[in-house]
Length: 249
Ligand code: ADP
Ligand code: MG
Ligand code: MG
Image: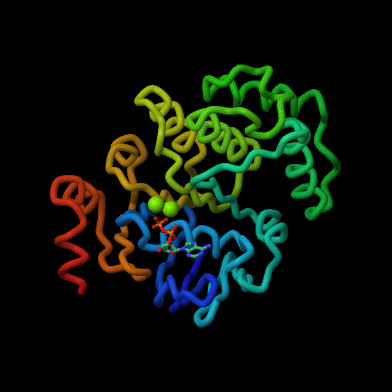
């Protein structure tokens, strides 16, 4: 589904990613862990086409397409979803309006008619309830005045409605209490399936107790310095990152 080869990227002439190689198959869940400032959010931003990054080397293919050649909205329509580490507020644009526009863009690209408005509203309501968000938030501006945890749960609502092929979730677990973490994990697990893949960027093993990853990668200094299975996450939790990043250096 996703093939990242020797990806180098920089921000404002500062090189951050130094040759990422990562292959993600349909149905897989990959966790990307690593210390602060290692380039995890940069990787997510580069994949989603967020402006401000310059790709200096390498390639990314997404379901056979050259991802780096696509506009952010084309990537979204092709089934790529990024859950932001710091979700943005869009005052004046309601959650319902925003999501309906996104879903209809996706449908239009496939020659499908617009989604039925009433059915869609019911679907949003159900998704919000599943994330324990008050349903009147449907008509509030996207993330407007939401608490940190509410914003994170709203990212999952968006994912549930958009049903992306590949979801990159950037520290969706940060700032969640244990009950919210379980709701978010349930939301992710409910969407797991043979045609969908996830990249879970996280600092902590906690999320991975609920969402079992197939592969765990450690990003340090803009490179994947180690990959393994679930055990690697547990070992990192117990020993910190120093032994991996030190070894790699
Ligand atoms: P992580 O998500 O792993 O904590 P980031 O990808 O956010 O790391 O950041 C990696 C490095 O790139 C950090 O040193 C950070 O300061 C730097 N960086 C990220 N965005 C910018 C930017 N817009 N301008 C300058 N430096 C940036
Ligand atoms: Mg960070
Ligand atoms: Mg980050």
